[in-house]
Image (tube, rainbow, N blue to C red):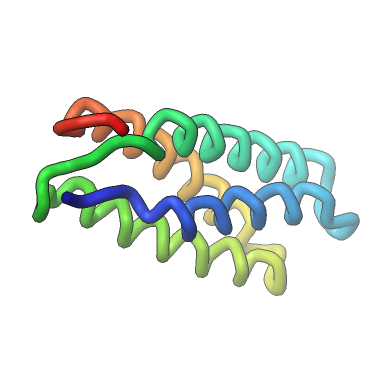
Length: 108
């Protein structure tokens, strides 16, 4: 049984929302962070109960992407020049999570 790393994904969502409230961001950057957080939150709600076959490559890759995104978002909090890269990665991850939902073997 394989699942999406919902704990780290939740940290990514929280980081997006925290960045959206950062007064050093432009309005556009803050909006992009807010949108990224909402996209990830929606993906989490859809995939949190999904169970995948052990070794499903797409899920393993998604979990790696989640870990990498978490690091990018934390870095973006310290280096605002990386915000657009982090929010772009968040949007890509949300799309990826939506795409792999169909690979689930069961839902709890």
